[in-house]
Amino acid sequence: MTLATHIDKQLVQALLDAIENNQPEQASSLVDELTQLRESELYQQLTQLSQNLHHTLDSLEEDAPVLMHAKHDIPDVTERLQYVITETQKASEATLSSTEKALNQLELLRQQLVDNSSTEPDSILLIDQACSELTNIMMAQSFQDLTGQVLNRVIYIMTDLEESLRALIERSKFDFHAIPERVGTAEQVKQEHERGVGPNITAKGKQDSVGSQEDIDDLLGSLGI
Amino acid sequence: MAIDRNMKILVVDDFSTMRRIVKSLLTELGFSEFDEADDGSTAWPLIQTGKYDFIVSDWNMPEMTGIELLQRVRASESLKHTPFLLITAEAKRSQILDAAQAGVDGYIVKPFSAATLNNKIEKIFERIGERKNASL
Figure 1: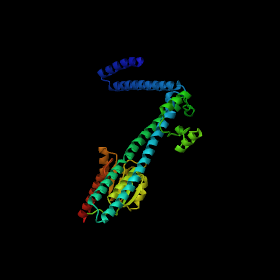
Figure 2 (figure 1 turned 45 degrees about the horizontal axis):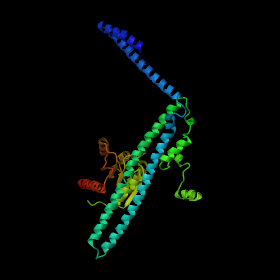
Figure 3 (figure 1 turned 30 degrees about the horizontal axis):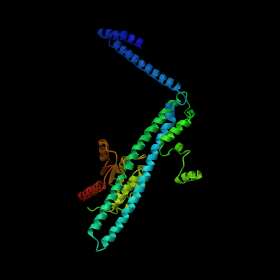
Figure 4 (figure 1 turned 90 degrees about the vertical axis):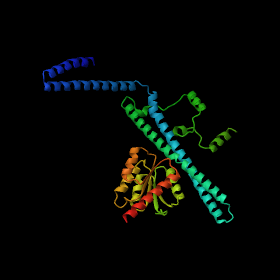
């Protein structure tokens, strides 16, 4: 870069001379030369940056955090987000089914009361109010569509990031498939389980988990509890 | 003009929860004839049969968006007058302008209320009635 700065000075002087001596063609070619110098300098810097990055990647251990994140954590996170979408959808559908049923039942009841001449007008009013509350419950379920859209977007970004990291890693000395599984020491696993890991929702999390209350009862039963 | 409660409605949304909510609300409003589609791409062949009197669609769907579906409907000589209501979380000024330019009849931003849906449907069919009267 010192060299480039040095040449710049000479070139600039030559450019000034060319302008003073009214030599437009000479001046224009000197401007081109200056620009090219700038470009090649930028190019050198970029090359160096890229070499540094590769050097850093190559010097990583096989289980360096960034590699482990790329291979294990990002897929884990997307799987968890997918779980949130699926579960909230299930809950919303169940709520919708119940509110729809209740609305139909109230409608039938309303008809029976309307047909009965001795019905208090207040009873009909109460039914209408209950129907309106059920509609509110139904409308509140629209959160699932909104949060689902947000989560889908996050999953999309995470997947994109995962692919970029993977491409970067594969351009270094690493074979993506050769990055080891995440295996904690027995002590780490114990600590993690003591802290609690939440629902076992990912394919990996389901390993060594019991599937149902029955499985738990069986397991405890086999221990005499 | 009284709204024909027997008209055939197509509800398009990629989230099944939202399709159910919209259908339930329409049922409460007295409508009973629905079909549903989970994307613009699956809605389009259904719409081309020409049997729908009203289309209610989401915007953001994976294969074909609601706005693209609207553009297709408006570009078709036989379908271009079908009333089209967008119910969507998209709320950028430019998007609403794009929808208007594409020829949307109504635009509801999620989350919305039953009253808003009722109100927009009434407005849409009121306007269509006025247009029909004007052309007579």
